[in-house]
Length: 240
Image 1: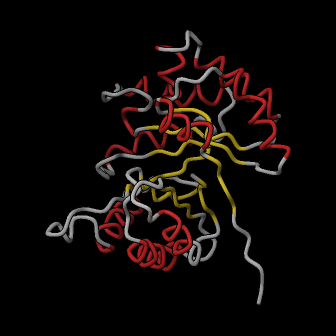
Image 2: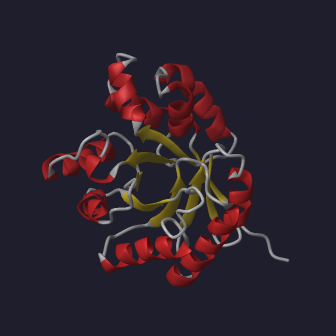
């Protein structure tokens, strides 16, 4: 039986900090841990975006772009550093004008980010079109994202496999350029069987060479089973 390469993206230094500390962490305090992770062989980290843009400014008296520069200097030029963007909100909490959306991509590229995971919480594909184009136009890798979650009994159909397939086909029909596709379960509630069926369908649509990733939180105690399910149809996983 042949071996399968599992590509891990470590989210400890963005989503981990955000989930536990509201991302209120001084950059100099965690750089040694980041360097140890690099020395251990991890090559892909999420380190910016989301609250890791706001919190350094609001709570740590740090310049968010300077923290990115320090991180890039600490890990060297070859590590894939990822940021999280909220579609047309980019790293804000409200929708931004087109010039700011483009400036976001330009500035994050300038300060060491190589990949942007771009999502819309309500799966409105229209919010991923221009933001995704700006990411690619400014020389960054674009990881377009489909948001997953589980809903209460009686809400079937809202987030089933057919719904996720519809979102995926809308992304493809819109011609959004992307280097990889992520399924992001920020609530950590997705049913592992549904994850399995969704990833199977996605692999059939995108083909064997597409980079597909899955990201979850251990909220409902199902994340480990969901990761094992998704690994049957994707070689990439984001480790939460």
